[in-house]
Image (cartoon, rainbow, N blue to C red):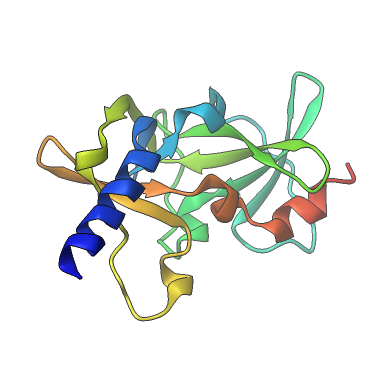
Length: 167
């Protein structure tokens, strides 16, 4: 039974292995699959949109395209931090209901692109309810540090996409 569990974990790690853009929020390091990243930009003027959850900062006009922006600190129930020269917006592309949609995620700072091997990835820890770890693909152990690998589609969430798809 234990060997099957190890094999399943190795299979999941192989599926998740690849290049990740790493970034920080507070003292934690996170990663998102590089294939979903479209670009990294500095913080620019964000237009607030009424009647949206508090973690949605609003929208930006990026080369004539309106893109919703969410603050990952607020999405993950962390304390708000004033934006500084290292704060950036990672623009990712996720699958909407009918077409791909671009969304900006505000992060404290971008670190590097890492090539993470299957053997360095473990499944997310069991923390009681699945809703607490549903945004996490896995935990990568790289250079003695743990990077939390995020599922961009789940972080952005259907609710956010539905509010902005019509724009």
